[in-house]
Image (cartoon, rainbow, N blue to C red; front, top):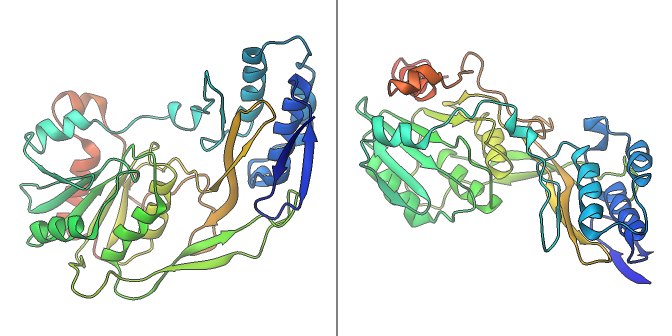
Length: 334
């Protein structure tokens, strides 16, 4: 027998499964059953899902065959944060973004708006647009951004009338970087949202949501108090989605583009008897209003814009153009 301990997020037992196709399948299903946090929100009947895929398991199937049956079962969750990891493949649900317009072209921005002339530091690309609007591109929250980096960026842009933060197709990363960046836009301790942990194996076994807060950057750091537009796309996911959920409720901040990709849960990792890893969301993250952000954050009313492919051929990013017009017209002041 292979023994696997499942101990995080409120579980208090040890389960045992054989290291064979049936045992590995049951281990995977049970780990999700006891720890995954979005069954109810997504309307997934996990018992029915078990029966649907258990019928495809047989003792003579290969490891690859088993992997793809298990991966198909996980896809029923429609969750970009859920992965099965083996030595030969990692499963990933792509339809959370693949069925939507991309709404971002790096080349389009760099060529027609920045003229390939911009500064870079700490994962941030930045420049001043002709309309005296600062532009910052943050491609991934996995790239560490230091306090010194932000001081230099904001000092360079401080003469601008407004700021654009472009996180289209930012797939997330480290939540610490979210806090580091948000702290430059707040003047008081600010409610960032709520977190609810699993307290037991039942699908409804959650703790009462507890609040978490961000404090302003330390005294002496350069802050930003002018209008801000955050550009979003369906590819804005996970930690980037969390950043949007916080910025959306700050004064003088507007969200422009399309609804983000979601992905709000805090990750949990476990292992199957055969050594495959499994990663998924086990703790729900809510915004400051107590609303789940798993399904994405909508743009500010009146600010939902798609990238026009025809206009892009002529060198125009319609989302970026909208943001510049919105900021320079004074509509962002609220």
